[in-house]
Amino acid sequence: MMDIRLYQINRERDEERRALLSTEALARRGSGPKAIDSSIYDCVFEGTVNCSDLEEVYTLFNVDPPENFSGHSMSVSDVVVEGRTAFFCDCWSLESWQGLPPSTPLWNAIRKSWAG
Image 1 (cartoon, rainbow, N blue to C red):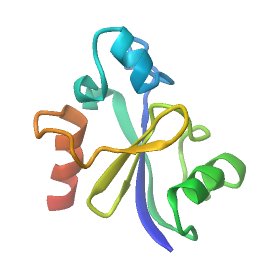
Image 2 (image 1 turned 45 degrees about the horizontal axis):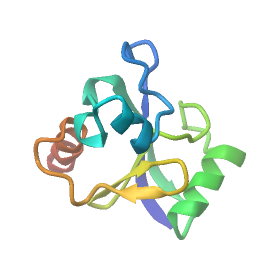
Image 3 (image 1 turned 90 degrees about the horizontal axis):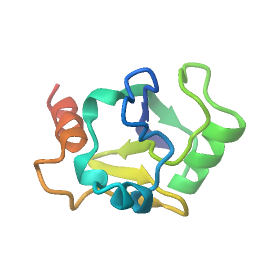
Image 4 (image 1 turned 90 degrees about the vertical axis):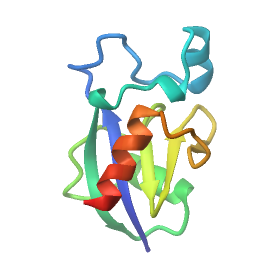
């Protein structure tokens, strides 16, 4: 069992069209995950899932999502938070965000949620 939060880009607020972009695509645009704007992300799921790893989380949210899930199938640019570690869904894997500097807007928003 895993306690997670899943964040997805709200496409209505995504003026720079960053949804579904990998870290490589973001870098080609001159930015990267460190520049991701937290104001375009929504928390679309928070709860416990019957999964043992992130691959199972990915499969769950694409095959049989929980009833209280309010987003689209899990995709590139989504962020999964488990415990105190955040993971960016990249093209081929879920990359750990644990080492990002404190200036990352989304990472700061996630950290604030731990305090609340």
